Amino acid sequence: MTEKVRLDERDRAILCIFSENPDASQEEIARELGLRQPSVAVRLRKLRGNGYLELQAGVDPFKVGLQMAKVDVRSTEPSKILSLFSSCPYFMNGMLVSGRSNLCLFFVAEKISTLEAIVDRHLRNIPEVQDVEFNIVISSARKMVMPVRLGRGRRKTPCSSKSACGDCDERRSESCAGCPLVERVEGWFF
Image (cartoon, helix red, strand yellow):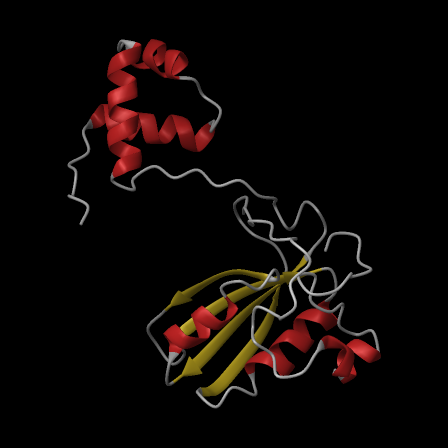
């Protein structure tokens, strides 16, 4: 178990510097804070080791022109739903929340119709799902980073769909792009 670390002013300053510039070098941070580089290295190792500093590579879905859906779900087993979508290339993130819905999911795709197909075909049909509210995200106040999962060559969809994409009405009508992990998708991003 990770110990809770008490952050001092210098630790908080390092976090702020990395939030503004993830490419900041230890030497730059040392100069700005009036520290020696080895001292900065020790602080960074402590911050990373305790989970206070995380860096994530990916793309900003809005900058590359992707559509985003926020899907609020009421489920009897929200952790199962999170697990189901964890490998989905269209799944950006999910959170357990309090309130009427107990799960908030974010999906991205090139077309809104693909997002609708994911929710209608792979989420609404799950027996543990009691209610779904589907919303398109128009913009965000801050930059968002989406990890990119574009690997191909799998034989099975990560969501364990009972039918192949070719058997799907949404896929046949081309309203859904299909799963980029299983088949070649003709989109510009996925």
